[in-house]
Image 1 (cartoon, rainbow, N blue to C red):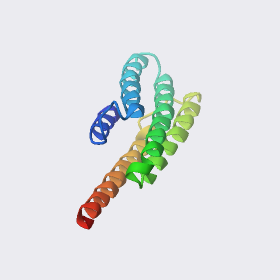
Image 2: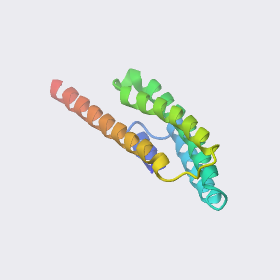
Image 3: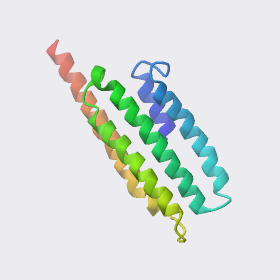
Length: 137
């Protein structure tokens, strides 16, 4: 899902060539999907560690995208918060993966919910900003 969201967002923001952090994020997300499928056969702790590594890298790439866009689009604060939170959560997931307890979906459910809220806030904020710019012309 993250790969698709990055593709759609990049296409609406000048394309993948102009949004290299998002293009790389798509590749990272696709590679992570394969890694998760492989590690599912090994250990849920390993799956959580892979997910954590993805969350860190994906969060940093999202943070980079937000900072780069700040000048041209403005109001990228939701994307900055989401990227930073994702990177921090990834570290926490990796830590959890080292514990003896087997992870469950509950380990990532809150993370996914907060990420969805950030996407919604960002989409609404950018849509309202675009409407205001159109009305001002």
